[in-house]
Image (cartoon, rainbow over all chains, first blue to last red; front, side):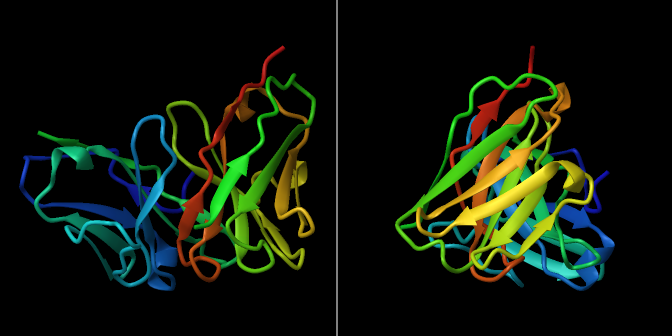
Length: 108
Length: 119
């Protein structure tokens, strides 16, 4: 079982804002990272650290953290944002990496 | 631009050892942390292990007894061995690199290689 918990599925209307959350005790100590994965493709890092986007990631993606919860927000969701999203962080020991179970985002 | 490429071991039989190599190009392996991650068909991501170029390693506790990770800096490669495989080990296996320091986010990924385990 994963030490990071995500909702299995979330939907958003085109152009609206959606928040995807990730809960886990280790998030009180370590930042979460977020990945977008489309079918048949490798995951792509979209948010890391406090709220940082790698080069090439649109600024409609943002991250935040509070207590044991990390969040990924997409402001003005686009059709191409439909994908699986995974959070990732260190575990409570700090020695290992863990992934959340993933959230399937549907853009309506 | 750093690029990672997994080898393709083909079909692996149950009870045998799965062996994978990740070749790094566009940068030196002699820094950063290098990880293996896998994804069974239709399921989520699972971190397997990491290695630092110096040889320091860490393993997923659930797989530790069967996994060995190693690095060959002369070839700019790192490798994974998973022993005593079963059908449950069928997955797409990815190699990846942290963006900066360990736990900073896996910013570079290989394309992945599907490894079926079947007799």
